[in-house]
Length: 238
Length: 275
Ligand SMILES: Nc1ncnc2c1ncn2[C@@H]1O[C@H](COP(=O)(O)OP(=O)(O)O)[C@@H](O)[C@H]1O
Ligand SMILES: [Mg+2]
Image (tube, rainbow over all chains, first blue to last red):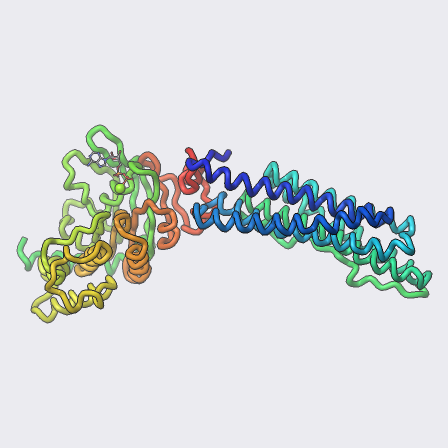
């Protein structure tokens, strides 16, 4: 559908941005997955690796912004080219945040290590992480293929993650009530779960950016938002 | 034609346009316009409505017919022997190709500014006074002084030249010369101003001044501008029309045209891609 630019260096500049975004995506996904694995298995070394990788994403985002700004100044992009560059800047910011969230989960590994993660809760967390990471993986695939239709369906699926998060939230509260010794690990796990839910949100943001890049229109309507945890209350006699 | 008949023709023009202004939404309405240079079919069935008191930009690759179509609006193509124009072009509902229309009067109502600033080899004052004089717009010297001053003010040139109105117009810088040409067009109280690449010979500062001027003139005039600069079209116009091989490919709000045009040919052209 898209023809090459008459100035081939312009094509190279745009390709650079897409390549860096894909690289960032791959790393952010890896970090988020490793952090959850480190949590569940109590692997401090793996957690440390995730923490140290964050700087790579930070730098990548900065480089993408620098290159994008230079390209805008030099080429004065129009239409799909302009949307592509604006989209790259937004997606890079989302991926950088995904890295931060992965890093935050990794940091909690040490605190949880002493008490360990109850098997049942670990399963819930893994499940949530699977959903969020699947969302992220698919959205990165869509970035490569530029399917507006797929981008839209990914956006619509954020609901599942939110529902999963709410149920995990409820479960964690129950554990805390059963035994005060659970409070420390469960509170950390609560944050971990929230981080994973937010990774899903960033994946959804990215889906919206891709939709805009490909179609030139903002996706219509409110995106589905069902974080019901804000109203969850568990009472001891429940 | 003597001055009196000129005046009459002008007055009748003014009256009818005022009436029609109320009746039509578009200032210029082109229907099924075809232009031929001998055998060459330069404009192919172009239909477009141009809105009053707004800026419409014509874009498209060289040779696609932008200038040809622009020249249809004030019948400048009449001066080209091999050129033949078919179809209807109406300003305020009045066909400009009606035999009753005097092309000289038409060109006062529809002023034109060209790529290369072309001041007459006369004083700055005379450059501006020339049109009003041949159209009999001033009865005495004081009236003419007034027209010259306000025209130069409207063209944003007054402060730069008010102390040297007797200096030759050709002695001004390129950007000033172009604004002098705009003052000259404005002096005969036109309703429409056509500009054919008015900034392509100007540096960025002079270009910015002309663009600022276009922005101000828009309140009172219908402006059609041909430009090779996508950024300029995006900056100065409200509507943009894309021409390609003599056809009008698409016409839309400028903001839409430069962020999300419909036609592949427009996309390729504005993004600088092979089409
Ligand atoms: N005076 C002329 N005589 C013959 N052909 C002309 C003349 N003016 C323009 N043309 C032809 O008409 C086509 C459109 O030209 P023009 O309107 O000048 O295009 P643009 O302004 O978009 O560059 C071109 O193929 C050009 O060669
Ligand atoms: Mg031309």
